[in-house]
Length: 73
Image (cartoon, rainbow, N blue to C red; front, side, top):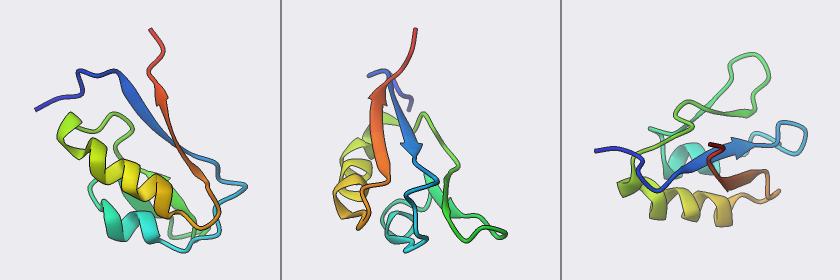
């Protein structure tokens, strides 16, 4: 499995409030930083099979801190 669609996951760490909705939705992509208590991306180029779940995490973020972008060439 791989990321053939050319997408990346980003978190705006200034906007993130550490609600961890993304971690619960896709724990293979997101985690909480022990020091800041905010979400971090642990797999910025997840497998394409996780795209729908990551999109759900984007929609479920209460502060809209997660984005999906087209990967830079």
